[in-house]
Image 1 (cartoon, rainbow, N blue to C red):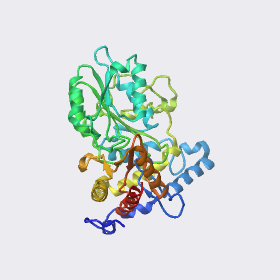
Image 2 (cartoon, helix red, strand yellow):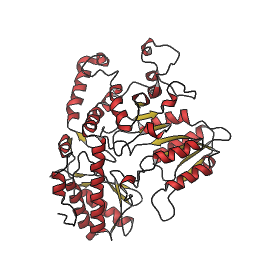
Image 3 (cartoon, rainbow, N blue to C red):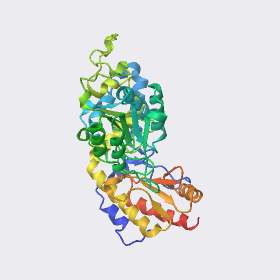
Length: 426
């Protein structure tokens, strides 16, 4: 076991006020099935809460016994189902429930909101993104530019880390916004960068974008359930996110979106409409004229997928019970423990490219094994065989994400013990 000159992980776990939540999850097994894996991959897919089995069973029973009547009958009727989760989701992202909606999946929601908020003109047409954007965002933005008749080579502005660096600098992003203010139509960035785990300055960047006359949107896929969010206070225009990562909503879970209160009743732009976004009071009158619901709900298209929504109700209840501030405190402690241990034990072999400052990182730590990609890939593969489940991002990054709801300091210590063994023999 790890023995270093900082607190004993056994004692840290004993004193952890959130330790009871680990028992609420079904954690994956190690490849040989002998024990639970050290699951550090909630940044990609959160594990399943125990209560999901019963809830999905009840939902399937309703489908079997009620059929179409399940839309209106049963303990959890399907028509209002997603709407009942909006309030806890809004609390988690720091927004009024009217400005939050659960619908579709992340990239579908990104397309829907870009269709409304990316409105290029002959003089203001450019979109600013990061050069290392997640591929789905890159593809969506590129296709939106082309759909609007724009050439990405001319209309896409990228901001990158400086040569020899891995992290984006807020000052560089703001400088790009200011330098292109006259032609920027949209700034679209990640709340947490997926490869490095860096938390961006959402408030500061948003203020700069709005001062430059641009619409500002955020991809919060790696931020929701990871860091505290204050979307209303940050005065952004829109945001999108998924719920299967840190929120543990299940594979393919329903996505989320936020639209600023500025657009509740006076949105004058285009909208790709569907009947579920129509005024709920008259939706089933089946009228030909679209009358959008007030707020973000007006961007809905179709009735929500219940089997991809139900698990999220369990997860949101766990987050509400634990409290985001308490979760954040433990997250900072877990990653701080890991960073200190890495530096003390493996500083010559492992580079952590995630920021050291607690305010600039979330749950995820991104590690680079010195010696090149082939060595790093061998270490990553062997970690999985030894029951430590993280993930790999090209070209050479191992990501581990100790989640405060279900991971322990003992998990981190055990993972680092195995990592040290593997580095020594590779």
